[in-house]
Length: 443
Image 1 (cartoon, helix red, strand yellow):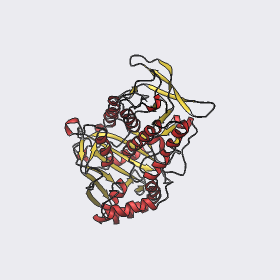
Image 2 (cartoon, rainbow, N blue to C red; image 1 turned 135 degrees about the horizontal axis):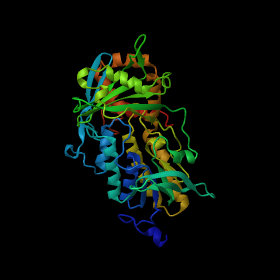
Image 3 (cartoon, rainbow, N blue to C red; image 1 turned 45 degrees about the horizontal axis):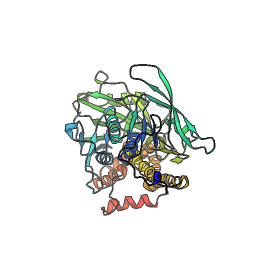
Image 4 (cartoon, rainbow, N blue to C red; image 1 turned 60 degrees about the vertical axis):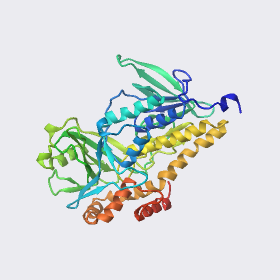
């Protein structure tokens, strides 16, 4: 072993140069910032490249389940109410004429509460935490084409345009690293440029949402409406393949939105912004979900689900979060899986960097997709079957009408949909869910 190979990693690695590093992370959303945080904390030199400047808005429900809460705790984020976080106790489900309030389960593996925070502030907190750990953050850095080694086909860096805060002009720069992490979301131009295209056999969702000033802003529960009715007429009301949500933000506003799956024939047919407007108009007047109380325009975003882009590692490029299609198909949650995949990727990279030869490093990196499939593959397979079922509005209606009248069944459903079980030592529900995910194919 050479002297350079035997040296321990420093607490914060000295930059290789201004535009080179051990690892480049493209995108400073939850996936990218979490990846950069754990890499930097382990002593690697990390460049974190973000195309916009903080604070910046992202389309999201802003509600965090206990899975995401656990990740924030692990990163050392202050999640106190004094720091601006609103806690929630669980999920309120409405459908089939029934209103059921379910607390988050008490588990050894996860806290029994969730959180709410707007994404503009949430994402910046994670990015700043990565900076504190030692990551070098470039904002207004728009990454374009990858730099590829002609001999090996491996990515060795990226081309980018870097803008200054006080200038509209962009300058061309290149960043170099032996490993690049794509955390650039659903569009993930970097992955496409490396030949990784979206799998059409995997579900895709769309979320549209807005904010209203409302007296319902301090709700202790996240609220999910399992029946989404199109009441715009003419003719009879139509049940649509989706769900609505109402999340109090604790700041005088409510986040109100809907999620829709592409497993329905009406997915491309309808203007979902108009559907959201009509749905809000059907709410009680004293909730305030009216156009004059809307604080921002309705915006939408894609929800890439169930590993819809693979492989998650190829030729020096690792995919995390939405870039790898890691949104939970059961409930549309993306932040927890973005952060978890970032931590997994960072752990694999750190282990690979400690190997002595390129062949050994490559062997370690090839483990990343396998760990992801072991962790989520069976669960996502079950989720794909689930979204096919609820793509039929009649199935959704029957499930809401009959299932919501059975609190024990709904407690099981909450654990299943939110992926909240203890892997060992759990109750009978945990054992059933864990067993199902183990026997399901890990595709």
